[in-house]
Amino acid sequence: MNRPKMRVVISQSMYFPWVGLLEQVRMADVFVHYDDVPFSKGSFVNRVQVKTTEGLRWMTVPLRDRRLGQRIDAVQVAPAAEWQPAHLGMLTRSFADAPHAGDALRLAKEVYDEGHSHLAGLARASLLALANYFGLTAATRFVDVEDLGIPGSGSDRVLAIVRDLRGSTYITGHGAARYLDHQAFERAGVEVEYMDYRLSPYPQFHGAFTPYVSGLDLVAHCGRGGVRNIGSGTMAWKEFLHESS
Image (cartoon, rainbow, N blue to C red; front, side, top):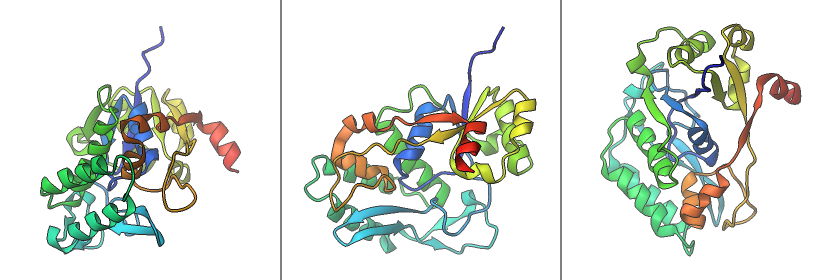
C-alpha cells in the first residue's frame, strides 16, 4: 500500500518574499524554517526588490554586530528608527494609487510593530503575514528546524529532515540543484520536485511586469484576489536537470 503523499519544503526565511516562496508555502504539507544556518551576505533573508518610478530598488534591512559565519537566527537587526520609516516610505511611493495599497502597508506596519530584534524572527513574520493574507497557511504545518534536533549540513541533512517528517516528496527552489544528492533521495524513497515557476503576470505599476519583487506588490495591486497568481507547479528532478542542462 502506498503511503499518503507528504510534501515537505525547507527554506531560509526571507524578508517580505517574492511570490515564488509563497507558492512553496501553498504546496507544502510541512514547511520547515531553516534559520540555524550561516547568514550569507547578498541573500534574500534581509532584502527584497521593490518597483519604483526610478526602477527596481533593493529594500534592505540593516544589521548590527554581525559576525562572519553567524547563524541567521542569531543575527540582530539595526534599531527600527534607522530603517523602518525609509522602508515604509519606499513602499508608500511604490504603491501610490494601487487599489489595495492600504492592505500592503498595513501588513508591513503590523510586522514592524511586533518589534523583532533578530533577523530570523522578522523575516519569518513577514513571510507568514503574506501567507496568512492570501489564505495559504490553513493546510500547512510550520516547523522550526532547530526543534527537530537533526545535525549535519547540506544534502544529507535535508534528506534526514524530510525523512524525520515522514515526507514522501521534497519540493525545492532551483538553487538546490547545485548540491542536492538526488540519487540518495531516490534510494530513500523520497521524490524530489523542483519549482516550475509560471511567473503569472498581474496589473503592475512602474513599467514592464516583473515577478521578482516583494509579495507586498501583489497585495497592493490585486488584494486577496492575488491568490490566483500564486499557482506554480513542480517538475521531477530528472526533467528539471535535463531542461537546465
